[in-house]
Length: 338
Image (tube, rainbow, N blue to C red; front, side):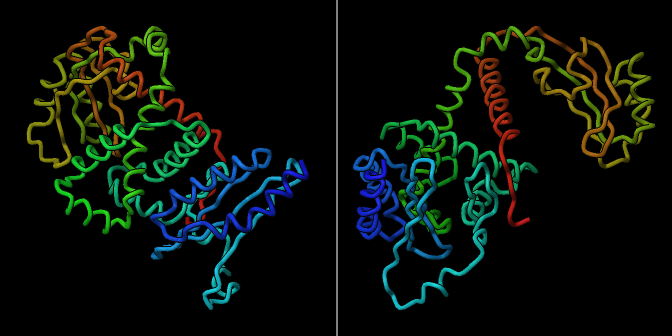
């Protein structure tokens, strides 16, 4: 083992010198790493890629594991007249936002995520951790996709983003700071995640449905939100006698509250507030709090669940959420910038 490690160290310098230094060539660097690993199969080799914000160039560090004794870190920098100590003296976490199970999420990765998802919801911090965990899962057990799948994913990504022409796509990529390879990887990751979801839920849908069938009952509910607690209590009490809509019409005649909302909508039982998920047809549930206001609802109709295509999709997504939540609970998460 020592001889194999020494041999890898000898070849590491030439390997580092041979790596391309432009962002668009990172894929080529990873291919060369695979060749280095093939040449030295007894030594664990990992390549750290440093992509400084605002720079078109990259740097590399090669980590060589020496059995259980430790890890040797090697780096090589071309002489470009910049003092190495000045250029690279900074806090080790200066460019990291969060570390999840040892995987560092860089500031530029988070900025890209922010640009893409916008202000979709208030789960931003959870989304960042989830993305890191998905990245790790795909590294631990890589999922291959075909060129056709990658191209189809890129086309769907462009259409969904409103990029209807090659020029619009190039302009968007420039605004986002993406190379063609990075754009392709971004789109392809959606295919890999979709396959990961299928893998996580494989052969478990029928048993999950049998155990949680009531959660997937189809319900039609009438819901009122925007009341104070006292008013909501009176509406619920009257609603259990006259029906929720009639009670609301009688007790909220002027509807002066701009936050007051009434809605008739269909969903599955698991999408209802916890207090209402077991509600029988005709029952009035409440009052319960939702986003700092008080609400009440009535179950107008409840139909037993069937294991159809939409139910299978819902179970598949639930199994994946459970799997991801489990990984999140076990993860070591440390935020650096907040």
